Amino acid sequence: MEIINRRAKFDYYIEDTYEVGIVLKGTEIKSIRGGKANIKDSYAIIRNGEVYLINMFIDHYKEGNIFNHDETRSRKLLLHKNEIKKLDNKLKLEGYTLIPLKIYFVRGKVKIELGLCKGKKNFDKRESIKERDLKREMERKLKYK
Image 1 (cartoon, one colour):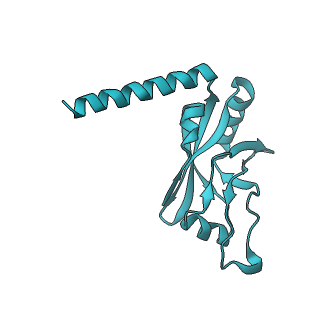
Image 2: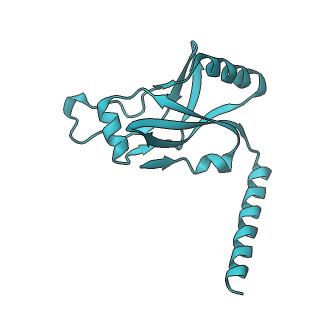
């Protein structure tokens, strides 16, 4: 099971990626296993030396009863202290953003691929669209030859 943020590559230049753990409740894990999560509008911030994922949507687990979780609560991400310091410097000084790119399982544990990103301007996005269209057209021509 893998949940991918397809919009991230279109909206941002991805400079570096990190594999991080996340602190979840039991019903959240069951919902993610069922594919009921969305990271499209989420981002990460550093607060008091800890990294938090903001605005990640995990749907209620239907068998969860009163033990269900809040759908868009802030979730703590697990990184080493040195990595957090390095990311904090880049975020403050160079204007980067932390964006979740993908959610996946490694040996039964949920991991998030976190990208250190810089935003694209509108003309950069148009260039990406042109390149993608040219690539498709070349593939079609090669296919029908």
